[in-house]
Amino acid sequence: MSKSETIRWGISGTGRIAGQFAADIGHAANARLCAVAGRSEEKVAALTGAQTNIAGFLSLGQMIASGSVDAVYVATSNDVHLDQTLACIRAGMPVLVEKPLTASLTEAKEIRSAARGSGSFVMEAMWTRYLPALTAARNAIAAGAIGRVRRLEADIAWKVPYDPSDRRFDKEKGGGALYDIGVYPLSLARNFLGQPEAVTGWWRAAPSGVDIDARLSLRYGEAEAIISCGFNRDGTNQLVIEGDDGVIVLGPLFINATGFEICASRTVSNLALPGGNSMQARIRRKLVRHLPFPGIRRHDHGFRGTGLQFEIEAASKAILSGLTEEPANTLDDTVAVLEMIETVLSAPPQAG
Image 1: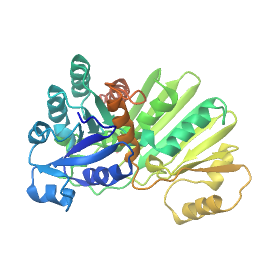
Image 2: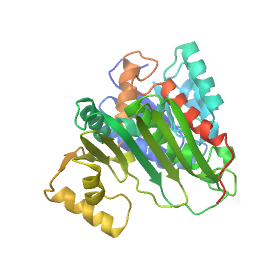
Image 3: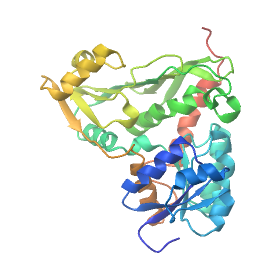
């Protein structure tokens, strides 16, 4: 590993999320991009651009063996996460793996066991957890801004035309709404409320057999989290946390929130900050965010780029500190979310 206070990152993969990582790392204080590995010379060259200080490789193994990186970001498709993560663990290379860690609970447990057995750093790239708005919302709740939390609702959904060749509908590539986008609100529910006492839910199947729509209920004593996701509709794409003394609203789109509102009541939040993408909803939200509105306080937490820099900084800090897991996002968190998904998907799908 380099002796400086900066982690030299390599990216395995050349797709869209790899491009976001490459762009956002420039906003991270303790990290820089030094290498890219992919199966195509053209795609590797496209990601490295004209930057001569970023090396290109045609395999993950070559990149690790080069000695040019201190850590690897796995940005490949879900079906190769296991092999690539285990390769990094065997090489003693810290690794950040794009969500989901894997689309298999068994594989995730295998990774956790291998990482802890060897003392290797492994972290799921659940970037939304690290956004300033989400951090500030958690702090506000801890400070009693809305009193005792009673209910958390999160809906993430958008229409995706069915295509069996699309990875999102391909079971072999870890497809399905829950693995692709449902992991976000499930991870945040655990982050805000902890481990639920009970998990129930249902799902509907796409023609390929993966889930195209799902809804989960997580019980926390007197509190409840309702999580929904889908590729068959346009959702509210909001995260709403309701307490005895107020309501926090994030989004749409909550997974890249640049701020949040604290509302006096759910009635106020429903009226002034409706979810969804209709013109009426957009106009109402715009008015509230630009004009004073009784019973609503706006908290802005904007950022440059697309927001991946915050997880990059957190992972880099943990690695530089000699940790094997990032304390706010452990492998137990990752496995717990996959256990919730498997609990629901193990039941037969609903018709319709």
